[in-house]
Every structure is written in structure tokens, then in C-alpha cells.
Amino acid sequence: MTITIEQPQLDAVAERKVTAGGGDPAELVLDGGFVVPDANAFGNTFRDYDAESERQQTVEEFYRVNHVSQTHEFVSRMRAEYGRLDKTEMGIWECIELLNGFIDDSDPDLDMPQIEHLLQTAEAIRKDYPDEDWLHLTGLIHDLGKVLLHPSFGELPQWAVVGDTFPVGCAYDECNVHFKYFKENPDYHNPKFNTKFGVYSEGCGLDKVLMSWGHDDYMYLVAKENKTTLPSAGLFIIRYHSFYPLHKHGAYMHLMNDEDKENLKWLHVFNKYDLYSKSNVRIDVEKVKPYYMSLIKRYFPEKLRW
Image (tube, rainbow, N blue to C red; front, side, top):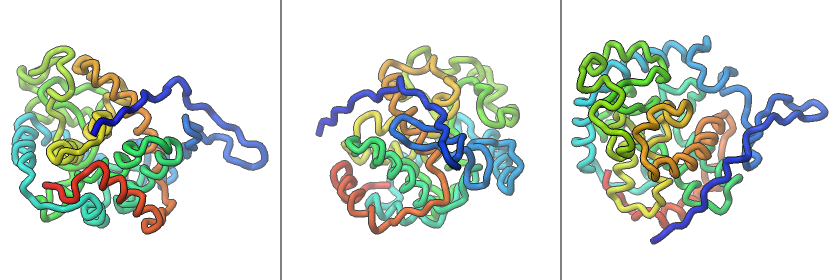
């Protein structure tokens, strides 16, 4: 199946919408009418890793262990082990239900079960991009790699499953969250890995770059090896949606090729919904399930190897 997708119109920048008569004067309006709240579920700014909140210490300790432990050797080993896709066979919706008991310790914005975030993301995209059904499904499945937390998948620690991702095998950019902890990672002091390009070359393409191991790369492998018919932009979003140093700060662009740069436009669109749709608003699962089941049937086999 060939899917043709038009490039998103990125000229329409976010603007401040001042409401007359008692509305919130600081709601941020994005492209399709999606309104960005000023505060997350805890009343803080989104992705504020220094905010004093009940989760701040948990999140910082998470990143300390993550940055110390995610080495080139570790990532290579995990990718080889989990790339075999020999853990189980199940459908997409089965995986969604399996995730329902997990909360992401790296996320300063939300402490609700994962199915809530998946549906919030997908439904917000669906409202603003009604004709891009591949993007709706991508929103629904982008975090399914978090099943790595489940006992059936080895019950990996959260630092090996969630959090912002970054390349390994080259120098860590200082825009990475809690950068200071990288100094305790052995690769930081290894001359093979601590230069701008490290083991890579300029414009080599992100598909040639090893990313820190976690749910993004795992779900990308699952989708690709199970022959999904999602377009390349969908696979790019799945693999790099946590790569905030790139899509928020513009770091590591020297490793990108032309296809990466085209797909990054769609990742920028997606990221607004992934980040800012997090709230305590509940979605009626049974009401929207038939629509997403139809998309799953279109783009994926009934059973997938995981």
C-alpha cells in the first residue's frame, strides 16, 4: 500500500489568543485550533524539570541513572536482544490494554495511566487533522514500546524505557535535560565517542545513528519488522518523538539527511499534541475504540511479533 501525505503547513505559528469576557488570556492557539494550556496536570509549566513539585525529585533521579547507564555498548546489546521480537505475539489493542497499569517516572507533566495519554494525543490530532488517519494511529501507538516495563518483556527499569532520547556514539549535546550527569557515563571520556561526529559522519542519516535505548526505538522496530503500512513520517515520529534535543533545540542536525529533514516537519506537528494534550480530562474509551480498531486493521497485521 502506498500512502501519499502532503507536507504540513508550518508557516502558521502559534499565537496568543486573548479571550473577551472571563476566558483565560494566556491560552496558546496552535495550527488547527488546538488550545495549549499554560499549565500541566500539576499546575506547572510543561517540561519544567526544575519546578518544585511532588515529582521533581523522582524525575531528576531518573535522569541521573539514565545518563550514567545509557552507553553505546548497552544500547547495542539491548537492540540486538529485543530486535529478535521473540517475547510474545499480540495485537495492537492488546498491547494498549497491557500498558494501562504503568505511569511514566520521567514525565513531569502527568501521572495518569498510559492509555489516557495515548487517547488524549490521538483524539487531539484527529480533531485538527481529520484527513490524516495515519497520524491519528501514530498518536495512539507512539508509546506502546513502554511494554518493556512489563514482566513479560523483562521488566526493564524505567531509565531503559522512557525519558528523552539522545544519540550514543558521539558527544552529548549540552541541551540534553540534566546534562551534568553525562559526565559520569564512561562514553563521555572515551575519545572514540566524545567528539561531534563520534562513530558517525556528517549527513549520514538518523537511521544510521544509535539512539539511547527505550520505548521509542523498540516500537519502531516492532512496527517496521511487522511490515506496517504507515508512511515513513509515521515511523519517524514513533522513533524520535522523545528526541527533544533535536525537535525542540535543533541539536544533532548535522547527522540528518534530506529525508530526515522532511519527516521532521511532521514530528514538529505531532509533538504539540504529544506534549500539550496531557491533562486530567478523560476519554470515553469504548466510544472511540471502533474507529481506532479500523485504523489498526488498515495499517497493521492482526497479530504482531514483539
